[in-house]
Image (cartoon, rainbow, N blue to C red; front, side, top):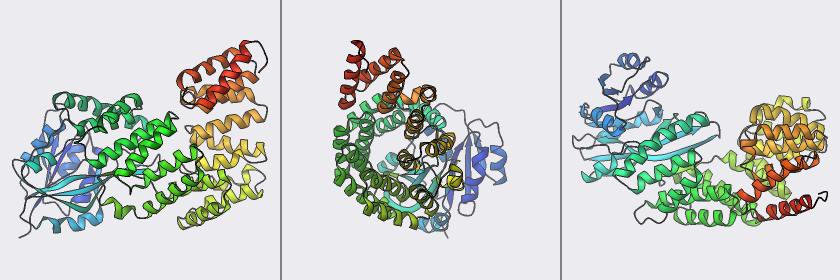
Length: 501
């Protein structure tokens, strides 16, 4: 007789997600146990249509309490726990029953893949989601709750499985992600006060990073890399976050040291090598940038195999790496690298975009309308590349028409914003360039080159006082960007002496 599986869930107002979740497991679980914390939509109606056992729970800002109440009502031999915004992979659904034959106390690590269509990346993390039922097994943690510590105390054996769970809950707007991170951060900080541990601190750091509280995130991760208890892979991730924070602050040497420390701990993640390549490029280490580009591409091609041994990873796609590689080739004028990247992109079904850039390069496109039909081939992955190509185009009016169209779709992209403003200025539309950057000043002030553009446009329009304020801001917030700061100080001295800059 085969073992029975209970699906354990907690829900609240999950009407838009629950149907697909339950459909993904309806043929493999023997019991559906749903704990509701106060739904007012059609969540319970959907649950009843699957003959779920429904229980009510008064929400107390503690996910583990609700999870444990759900566990207490499960009668199956095995527990599978999911959230409503998750779906069990179709192939995994076919395999899951075969994993529940042993009578041993086993917990299976499953891979949860979280999607983000905005940046066209996903993240993978491994959790024990399928385990043999035990009345003494309990979740811990107010948020990002874990079952593993409890199972460890019960001497469970842990096995890596190939089960995949698709998570769509973070495939939302940037503001939506921040709202979730803020909710989580409040609960995590409560948890950390009562039970300070590295895992909770790591989650706090990640939440601060999503919220763009970079100074706080930096403190969190700097504390974590000093810990002797933190899992090696999570320590590598901490170094990776620190590298990203340092790179954003234009501290490239510091960023390089951090990402090299991450690679020493975990060498097989394509994102680490991809990030290191970008750092090398900013430091003008061209050979090293190409070497790391090739490593990241090679690891991305084997990411499925490598991911089996990785607890957590950013899944940077081959396409993203190839588009970056093609932009690198254009920047350094490397025809061999350019051809290699284009050939690889053809294999990735990106021929429409390749046709677009060839039309632009060869001059066959005389007018923006000649390439308008290819506009859908431009995405978050290649917008920086097309922006760079347009920056080198001989016809500034063609470039401006193209950039104006792209701006309607990608207005949040700093590279595009800068080039659009610069092209306006080149066509003697400096006031329009100023208005564009002023309208996006919250974004502009996070990017020193954008600030410098704005200041120079002010000078060109005889708005010297406004330019001086921007120069002061650059000196104050970006003093590590030495070359720019020296340039700013020279211009300021001339202005203050009353000499035309």
